[in-house]
Amino acid sequence: MTPLRLSALTATTALGAGLAAQLEALQAARSGLSQRRFEDCTLDSWIGEVDGLDAPLRGEWAMWDCRVNRLAARALDQDGFRAAVAAAVERHGAERIGVFIGTSTSGTLATEHAYQQRHASGALPAGYSYRHTHNPHAVAEFAQLQLGLRNVAVAICTACSSSAKVFAAASRAIEARVCDAAVVGGADSLCFTTLYGFNALQLVSSDVCRPADAKRKGISVGEGAGYALLEREPRGGELALLGYGESSDAYHMSTPDPQGRGAALAMRAALQRAGLAPSAIDYVNLHGTATPANDAAEDRGVSEVFGSLNGPWCSSTKGFTGHTLGAAGIVEAAFSCLAIEHGFVPPSLNTQELDPALRARYALAPQTLDVRYALSNSFGFGGNNACLIFGRAA
Image (tube, rainbow, N blue to C red; front, side, top):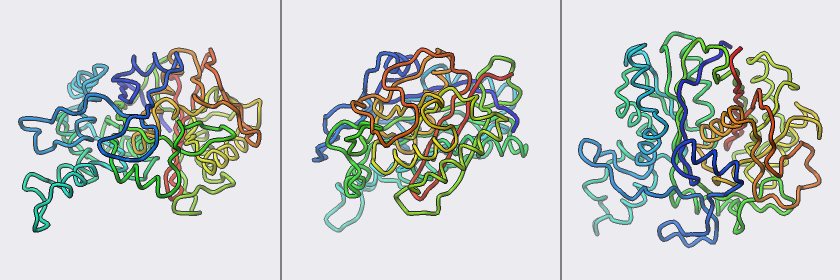
């Protein structure tokens, strides 16, 4: 594929708002997870909650008010992202910049609140608007309107691979001349459906999530948002999307193929598009949810592609942020780019005793390393696999 320049990048998670907050926490091995409860949720779990989302959207944006849109707007305000998009509008025109946003639950919390406030007749409150909140496309349209763009606005909802697959969709759209540049990203906020739903699947850990740990018990749910601006013709040394790969397990609705075959297919496709051999990859940001089945399956896929022990450094960053679901792809793409820019590999935080059955090369402490190429995995329910490769343009 033709590399695409990352002209701007931002992320907001439980670690803080903007890339500087993410970088500081990753280098200091400081987690954003806590045991505080989300609203009146009674689960005994750890969560990655973003602070400061209580203030409602006002004025012309009041109809869009919900937690996920507040989070989406917060991320747009960081790292000069709005200004970078405005400069891109000057170069390309607002009608030539597409928007591709990944989300999993979108504004589900708004509907949950509406049901809690329904009238005795069962009617939902008058101010509730599914079209501007819960609707999965709402966050994509909201971002488009916030940025004043007028090309396509696409929402991709493939669970936890959503905001990784947006990079692939945008790359194809730019290649097909549907648009000349693209804002890609994702946003997912905490809600009861996610917390209780994953708990019903016995995937939520009462302990902090411990990716690749011998005694791992499951995920810690988090929330986050982030964006990247993709444009053609990166100059030498600029950060770029070099390759992407997608596959489908066709194995089970909520369990990955235990052989990791779909994961391996996605990674190989990304390497092929990037024109890179497996040995070129210096760091793999694992999907690494800390569930027994996911970590084992991904490890098999990584080991099949890269070999065991002497392959690239691997780590899961979900011990920092929790599993941000539909936002995981963009958040971990940002982490991968930070690793390249600042020459380090973040650790698999909270991992105390590495599972001896796992074969990949896990970083349990921060590593100083010249990261030339980083690969980021995002795998969703139903075997929706996506893999992205970032590096500096030649």
